[in-house]
Length: 182
Image (tube, rainbow, N blue to C red; front, top):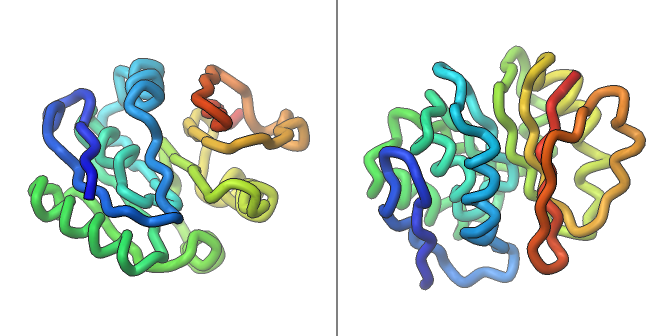
């Protein structure tokens, strides 16, 4: 087991415990610090979606920085159990909603909820962005929704009419991009 330190906000300095799992690739601390410097100040009463939540580090960091509610989606049982335990240990279960299901099922079945902030950090090389991004933009966002996408290599030109690139960063073979829905 290893640990991820919450970088900022009211939970800054607290620890998220992670498990060794080949499906888990936590966003590096330097990148998380960069993301949240871009996002500050977070709008009051914002609702956040953390798809492919894994350790939950992005959603938990968002909650620590002022998001009102975070919806976590994680299908892997071991990762889901660890995420639940971290939320319990951090005493944030009342501010989060955890779903143990695939991102595809959540996107297909969920209706009538719009998010202010969406974290999309899918497993690389699986084509999840082409599959999910159109529905996320049309059904789960509004003008001004911020979407952070972490991916190894993806051509976003098909989404230029819907997404405005605000910022980007990289670490190793991972590229993080913050978009605003237009």
